[in-house]
Image (cartoon, rainbow, N blue to C red):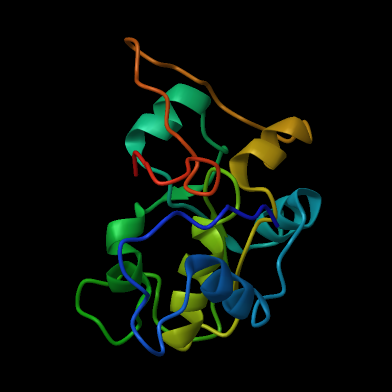
Length: 163
């Protein structure tokens, strides 16, 4: 896991708070994360591969054929079997969901949130879309219609994130 240097702060963190590196490490202890090839096989065998990347990232870098696009900001509502805004096929808690983000950081947090909803078979892809593409697995695009600003990884961006 990449680690960021602590940013200088003007005040100490509140008691009981945790940094994102601590939170990420904790949620990953709950996940059985999949390497790209394992995720590809799981998807071919019926797992729902969910791409949570923003539209700009998908346009700039491409998509995985057959993946379901559900942006991060609505993920829990679409995958909570007890919620009226859920996707029609989300009817029980045994659904296998494999979450894909750009580099495999946000997807870990998202998969843990799905587990918190009761989807015990939720996990994510180690290295995200970048690793998937680099492994030579199927990708469509990119198909940018115009120049899009680059998106900075939340881990390598320091204190500035374009997310």
